[in-house]
Length: 138
Image 1 (cartoon, rainbow, N blue to C red):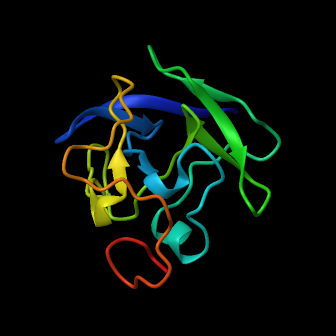
Image 2 (cartoon, helix red, strand yellow):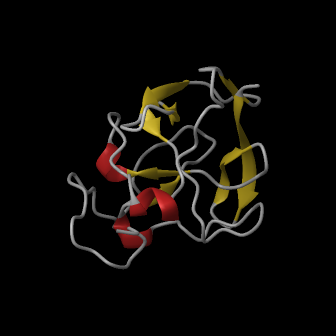
């Protein structure tokens, strides 16, 4: 079985989702490299991973540029254009996008393929180290 990335409708437009319709997010400190959201952060923002024993990722209609990257625990996390993908535990049903813009570093990914940080949002380059709120989960 493969991990599946689709598109779905939210209050922020049509964005990338998992096969259950849950919104997927990017964490700007990750860039297009090693996943930086680990430990408590990953509890609040679960990484989208492929099932054990497979590295295959399937994209819905018009969704390409999918791949995987190794996490520090050895699991493979799904990437879009090299960016590791996450879900947000604050989303309770398909179409929720409650994580959009949290702490200025968590963003939905438009299904149109744009990965630009929305205007007015800072482009973080280093992960937070002491935050206890704002969606970091540390």
